[in-house]
Length: 175
Image (cartoon, rainbow, N blue to C red):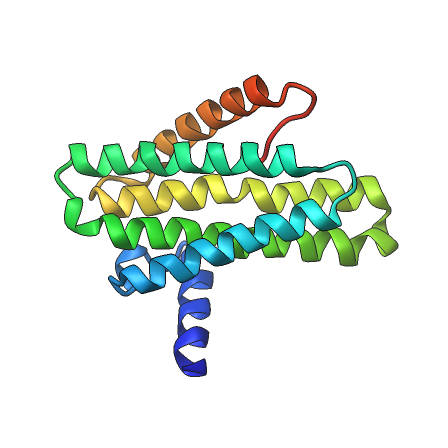
């Protein structure tokens, strides 16, 4: 069991480093449920540990995340890649959870050394890395060049930010 979890974590790290694609993830509905739980838990940790964030931010983040997943799913279906949906969704949510945990770790552990503002900037840059990673995942899912996936991910990110600002105009939302 532990070796399978470690293998999944290493695979997700390889995807984050753009070394592997979603096809490296097992096609498993149970794994998708576990990854969804990890993604939601990571979001909860962010809301709990980062000052100034609240439940509204969590709900908006869930909504924008679901919108992104829906957009990527529509694109995969439009390219007739329904057989890859489960792996794509698992990969996106898995890297999302890992990047959120890296965000929290960076924010919490770097703040005493670098100060609140610089640590927050570095942490948000870690979150921003999810855009090219999601682009990589969608490009691999639909068998397109990396830059097509990146353009898709940028468009999805822009839509998520716009939706987030509509539902929570006080502050920007990180998906």
